[in-house]
Every structure is written in structure tokens, then in C-alpha cells.
Length: 521
Image 1: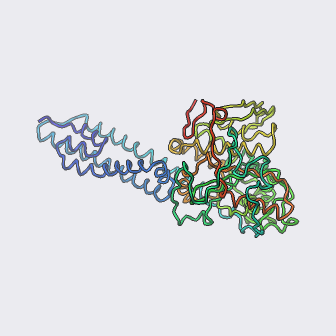
Image 2: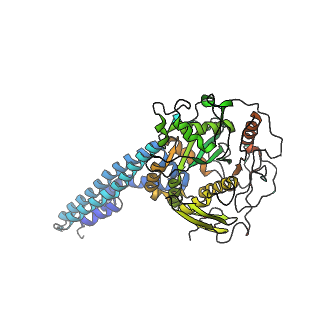
Image 3: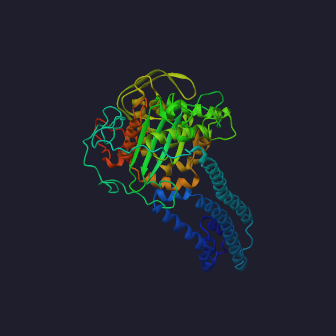
């Protein structure tokens, strides 16, 4: 019998604990060492069989995330012990059979220790940093959510089958088509809770989850015109130029986006701030409400103890609370959370996704478009299929010189839907540190890290091809009837048939991705 090599035994147990012991002539011992690793491999296979939801849920759940970090430390010591044991068994066996000492073996073992340290240490460091970043970013900001419920308005129903006055002209009751899609005939409405044929299943969400107490998750998505870094606005003016209410029915995963024009005047304010303005209506453009609230601590609640300088802070709760309260009053929907991102944050998201395909229905020209870095360029986006990085996707969504604010809202909703459709969370995991770093500088949210897992599950059941997209066009509120019309539209949206995607050669060129595919140029 030839003498086993201690160095080779250690290498084998580095590759898979227990192999080195089997090689050194101790199969039973090797089997015992292999059991924990075999169980780990089976657990990984089981997790992967559960699909993307299981992996993302594991990473986003704070308890399991911390458990993984502890498990990694335990496996580090287990890995080391298995290598040292295999080395010792082979060395003893070598002495028994008269093989003598292997002079290079200690150096090989030392090198394996360093590799093991890197193998477990780098993921541990990244995981600890990422966990701290997630907890810091998604720490919840309950003071930034509206402090009161929408004031009651007589819930007079809208006439069945007719468009509400607050809709974009020409929009069908089932929602308007995204750019690149043609309106389709409206089928019979699908009863709430009955999934239509071909609709992906809706995952079962933890019933103890705080969001969706009314059956819906209502998130206010805001794009702010701010180029700030590290949360300091300096002397810049923060304007909420993109305001979208995303509502998702928890039971069916039906989703709708409602866009609000930035130039809306006389928007109703929530009760806690309504007394400062005649009739409880904001007398300026809606996109100016954030800054007005941030500058007036005596009028708007939130950010107690901070004066007008709150307007220079991206996380000024007073500003977010005011704009969320106004949207809540208009729609009657309880706002569960806010996600606000500035220009750089949007660019970072799209770039981290790897870019986005957009099917442009008509040419977009802007002779003086101001980029996120402040430079001015001549923008000329051709009609048809285009692949954009973050800067160009932002330019398409943000340019306003060619058409109206309402067409601009349409483009914004389309870009958001396409990013959601083409996003692959598993592919983004290697770039998670980069994305988190950008988010810490450019994103404000009221979400807690415990919300991320259920939200990821819910998002996986949302079919972006069947998402309702509504753009409210009313520029001025005058009576409660105006509010009632908008509330009815939001309330009844899921009683309408979901938009049916109708891909044709005209609106989906051959070089553009088919649903569920995201080829890269």
C-alpha cells in the first residue's frame, strides 16, 4: 500500500469535507465529516428548486440573513477542522506504512488555510456590510407617513362602463396602452379574486404582515428632481416631478399605477395640515408641496425640532408626509409606504439591471435636455426598439419639451413597467453592494427591512404586461365631487378587466425581447 499524501488529503477535504479522510484510509471517519456538507448541499438544491422567490426571500429576511452569517462562521471552523483532521489522518497513516515525512505538506496546509479564510471571509465581510446597509436604508420612517386617514367623502359610485373625468383623454376604462402597445377590445370584467386564464399564480403572503390590512398594498413612488449626494440638498430645490401610486391587490396580485400631474393645483391636504390653507387645498403646484412643507414646521407636522433647514435634507419627514398625505386625500387609499429616488438613483438602478429595452412609439426630440450631471445636450431618440442605459432611460422618461406632462407621465409609467418586467433579481445579486451604495445616497423610503421579503414575493406574482396604467389629467380641484371621481377610479380599478397585451410586429420589433426574455446587445 502506498503512503497517502497529507497535502493531497487536506486539499480533498478543502474541496469537500470527508474526501481527504476517505483517501487516507478512514472511510467511516470521512462519512461522518461529510454529513454536514452533504446536508448543506441538499439544502441549497432544495432552495434553488423553490425558485427565485425562495432565494430572494432568504436574503431579504433579516432573521434568515443573520442566520446565514452565523452559519458561514460555523462552516469556516468546520471546514478548517475537516482539513486538519484529514491532514493528520494521512500523516499518521504515512508514518505507519513507512512513507516518511512530506516536507511540502505544511506549506500546502498553510496555503489552504489562507484560501479557506478568503473563501468564507470575503462573503462574510460583504454579507455583514450588506446587512448593515439594508438595515440602515430600510429602517422605516413612520413619521414620514400621513398621520391621519383620508377624510370621508360621499362614496357615490362612478357610472359603470364610462371613463372617469380624471382620466387621460382617449384612455379606455380598462387602462391605457403603454407606448408601443395598441388598445385592445375590452373583454368581460374578471371577478375580483378569480385569476384570468394565463395569469401567473399569486403567492400566499404571511397574513401577519402589517401592509395590506385593507387588502391592498399602496406604495407612493416618487421621482425627485434633485442631484444631491449623501442626503444633503444644499441650496438645490427638491421637486417631486414624478408621483405615481402603485396599488397591488394582495389576494390576486393585480396591480395598477396612477400618475399625478406635477402642475396640479388646489390639491387637498390631509387633516393635520389642512387648516393652514383656504378650504384645506394647497394653492401652488403639487410638485412644490414637498419644499413648502419642509420649510414650514409650524404649518406641517413631522420632523419635530427641525426648522426650515429641513428643506435641505433629502430625508425630511415633513416634506414626504405632506405629499403622501395629499395623494392619500385625493385617492382615498391608505399609503402603506413611500419609495422616493432622485435622478442618480434611477440611473444606478437601470445600470445595475444591465440596461432596459424600450419600444418607442414616436421620435422624441429635445434641443436642450439637461442630463443628471447638469450638462445640456441635444436629445434625439428614434422611434422603434432601443436599448438604453440609465442616463438615456431617464432622458426618455423625463424630457418635457416635445409633448405634454401627461404624455410624460405615460412615458414614466412605461419605463417603470419595463424595468420591472426585465429585472432579474438573481442576476443583480453580485452587484448588490454597488446598488446598495447608490441607494444609500439617492433613495428615501419608509419601508422596513422586514417588508422586503413579502414585497419581493408579491412582486413576483405581478404581471407587468397586465398592469393598469392610469394618468389623471385634472389640473385643479374645486369641489368634493372632483375628489370623489378620483377616489372612485382608484377604488374600482380591479373591477375592470386587466389590460390584455397584444404584441404585434408593429409594436414589438423582432430585435426587441419577447415577454420574459431580456437579450443584451
